[in-house]
Length: 58
Image (cartoon, rainbow, N blue to C red; front, side, top):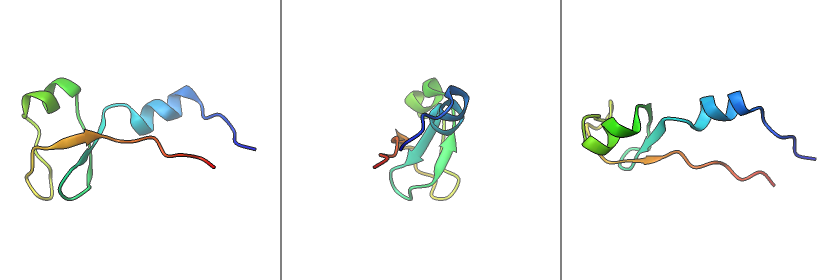
């Protein structure tokens, strides 16, 4: 039986978290800064990010 996660937990794990498309490292930033290209990856200096995907529970 799969339990529902608390909204605070889901917010902390997925809200404002982006993943680098090149090296797959995670970074927390505002959407407006990501969209404007002001945020760079700490590891590879790339500016291309995607939102973190929610994991499927079986």
